[in-house]
Amino acid sequence: MKLQTEIPLQAQPNNQIDYHSKICLVGSCFAEHIGQKLDYFKFQNDLNPFGILFHPLAIENLITVALNEKDYTEKDIFFHNEQWHCYEVHSKLSSASKEELLNTLNNCVKLTHQYIKEATHVILTLGTSWVYRYIETDTIVANCHKMPQKKFTKELLTVPEVSESLEATISLIRSINANATIIFTVSPVRHLKDGFIENTQSKSHLIAAIHEHIQPRQRVHYFPSYEIMMDQLRDYRFYAEDMLHPNQTAIDFIWEQFKQVWIGKETSKYMDEVDTIQKGMLHRPFHPNSEAHHLFLQNLEQKKQDLSRQFLQIKF
Figure 1 (cartoon, helix red, strand yellow):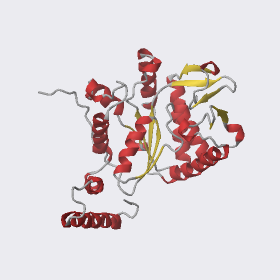
Figure 2: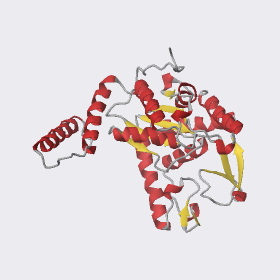
Figure 3: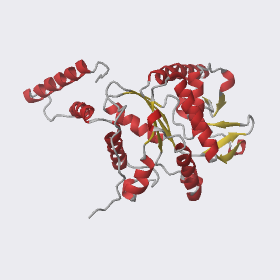
Figure 4: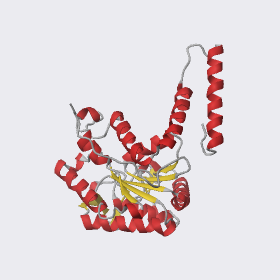
């Protein structure tokens, strides 16, 4: 008896991720989950340098800023609640020091430009079609930074607006990196603060717009993380306590599905070796001075050295 409806997935025949790949991840908090998995298994990746970005216009702006190597100045930031902020980035970059924030922003621009230029894979995770427009400047922001609600208007991007933004993002990436594989995915996190119906509208606009641009022969793909959560894992036991975010079991499951599609069997063997080393490093012995534990540490160190000789970028 099957107790789930399984989404059929096939391994990508070309351009899979391996330990020579450079992966750039940008987007919603689900991109963070995938990025953390890539970190754990020691893949080369750059995760949300400007922090979490929820909607397509914020992602497009980030790519534009990075590729044009924008120089952030005082006119791009503001002071609120004892912190300096920038409307184009997440509040995790905010700082009590104006100079520190500007240095962080400009360093992120340089690093992101270089990473997109060198990336073999760019993973873009969209979270919502709802955006906030800052009334004073008539611009869409990436983050409101807890400014008063009356300073913003809330808008739902139409399918054509999302599609136009995605087209611009793809073109920008291609302008400096013609060979990168671009993978779109929609975050499975439900934005119920917008409302149940409004969340469905939002996600549907994203999915409809994305599929206007999926062209595997042009290295533009879609991974169904949202569909896996909504259909294959349609049970609240796969949600965190807030009943909105996927819990660790769901994250692990979706990661395994992603791995099945985008990571080959040969690379998976090395991932198993990395996993063994990572778990060994977390091991806490009952008898740390015993001969058995010293032998365990020697074997663990040998495994690290053997793997690092094969892949110089892997560091433990």
